Length: 205
Length: 205
DNA sequence: CAATGCTTTCAAAATATTTTGAAAGTTGTG
DNA sequence: CACAACTTTCAAAATATTTTGAAAGCATTG
Image (tube, rainbow over the protein chains, first blue to last red):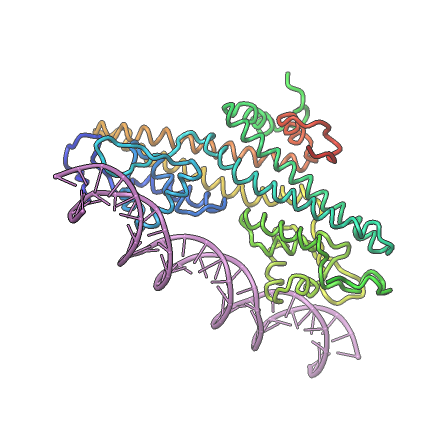
């Protein structure tokens, strides 16, 4: 509304309410990825708009950029703040709140993985353990067929458990990696997919 | 609440319609994980029941085990078959179709990652590239402020692009790793997160 | 080839999720 | 204290997703 493309206003405070085509592409695809990844699409879209904006934006700016209601913007920003992927910033002389995206991607991912995946996986691990425990009586029951059945189930649940533990470690690796600036993992990945021959991928120098 | 362990019927055809408590736990948690991970919860539940069953099960067995409608079972099985995580098996002398879960977890994950994530990420990569391309005009336009704005956006989108490429490589690594029996990745993860012995995953810490 | 037993399809119904916007809440100001 | 200027809340509306079950489709068998 207040923007005036023709006015040679100073760069700092004039607001652009429509996002440029490239930003639209990005916010759309990030929205999708993020949704796919279990969050609300609008979280991804709002984050993207902030991420691509040189200055912090107000809730109203976002409302216009993405044609969302004030409520949706407020709630979504709240979630993004809770996930620590968006920050409030004070713009001096302004009464409104302004928001900026966390721009350190690894930091961001690390935080989210850490809070979300770890909880999820930890819960799965617990449950698998519990399920195995529940098998115990049958494992030493008197019915041979039931015993065999339980044995097989224990075996299979153990596989799931092992897998969950690997997942857990993968997340931990990503998280700790992120703190140390992505080096080891990235190096590992480069080696693993760049050099296509599996001949000797295990001995560095 | 429990099957009839006393039926002297040959193992092949007597049917258990209620699942045991441990299987219920597992199918619930796998359902959740799978949903969380973007599939339908019932896919995870059905797969789990099959995975924990010593014998293949018919659609009807599944219908009873999980209290689903025949349509839901049929559609869900169809999807699971398409993803290659469940197979049809012939039970001799039976007219119905029987189904069994893929039990090689890594193989399964690898297939799914390969088809699904790769497509998703590849699309994101393309889009980021396209978005950067769209910035070109502004990058060499005459308006200095706009130029600076575009420069920053290009920078940021490039970060996303790099991240997407790393993700892509991560998926590729997991996939190729899975084919060669998980060795290198697992070893890497073990080193990275400080666990002890690679081959016997029995002690939690 | 008609009947039977099973499977798939699909439109409608049930559920779940997301968005809206008006009203209530907060905070800074005259 | 009363008045802005914003923000948050939340019940209702809009959407989207999942499930149902009756009917159509198929394949085997007598």
